[in-house]
Image 1 (cartoon, rainbow, N blue to C red):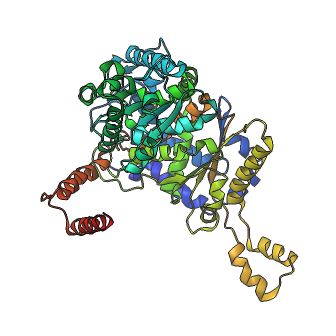
Image 2: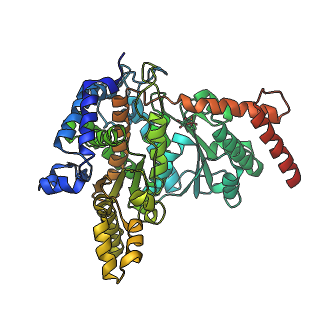
Image 3: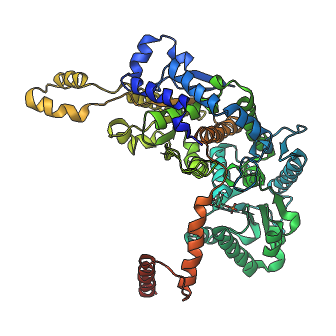
Length: 546
Ligand SMILES: O=P(O)(O)OC[C@H]1O[C@H](O)[C@H](O)[C@@H](O)[C@@H]1O
């Protein structure tokens, strides 16, 4: 089996990249008056402007050629048809079905799953409404004031991020999240929560994840201490695929919201895992979120590759990392409400594509798994933008900018917009030594003082970015944004020929944690000398503290 890196499409791109490395993005603009509009793709007001990438029409054609060579359209159709894409676990990747419209038919491994999806959604809606309206009462007859989701990874990042993004629409009980097994997180909440008015949602696809189960048992003990076992059915619900474990924990089957093994954890916020979102913002907003994602799905499945937003986003990433050899992917939303977006995106991208073997198990001989990081603008400008502008490696940036800001504070939004656009322009244009000299002469510097100052003030420029404009940050556009990045991740995996839907890489650490726990219990767990020494230090340290 020859590697994609040996294929004709890849080789053509490789040679083309050698040529384009000599180019300036600004010169590409000089030669093409229509570049800004021609290198923009639009869906329902969402505009992906990729004109500030170091690429020309020929390069784009070659990238699309690579996508065709890799049968991208075929893979998209196979995902939409619910085929078993995740071969190592024998599962489909059915997250698009979770946002399918009522009355539509969507198959996963040959079964129409829409009746089951909508049946759970109806139960979620009804339950959320009961909690929100105050009809659902705790053991003392009082209404629910605080809801705590206990979950980690995909059972935490998605709902936490959406809850944060839609905070301005929150009109239900307060929603909190506990993910870390570090007792500091849950103890901080238990200090002030009222057991009679708190609802716990235990969210775990497997219902066996150590951190989640530890936190869930701590919450359960706390409630039982205050109100006895009988209170559990009024205060604990579960979102999971594992009915048996839920019952063993003591949660009523009637309080279980089901999802299925064809929903990957990092793609699960659209399923029962979204229950905390529903309770926070209500079923109507949740429906809008799903509708936005559905619009992106339909676009992804039906738009031609050259106008397909997720496809373009992924191909440009491939261009930057596999052909121009740039460093990492930076994502900077100029929207405070998207503060949790990066965490969600990191799991999505790095758990999906953090692999070095192809679907067939062959080692790859090209880069995969691009490290993705970022923070909200404008804060990020005051943290890591120095290295984006003048550091030795180029890190392409996705700027994400809602076109509307906070009502009544429009002048804040003007400044936000100005900063966002200025950063991408600065990355592209840079500043030449001649420009720096002129500037310094204007400030009265000359001779050696001037020359020694120059290198520190030069910006190489030619640093690529995308700008993604959203009409506004509402539930609909958020849904579309999240689905855009989900599909981007999938497209990358198709080009790289890897399975984006398993995550064996997290298993070894989990197994070894069990060994370390056994060793802490005094058993011989066959640990390595370094771990044994560290454990001894920790034992001594904790004794000193006691
Ligand atoms: O939802 P759970 O079964 O508790 O799993 C939570 C998380 O566990 C692991 O970290 C997996 O790699 C993630 O994909 C998953 O989201």
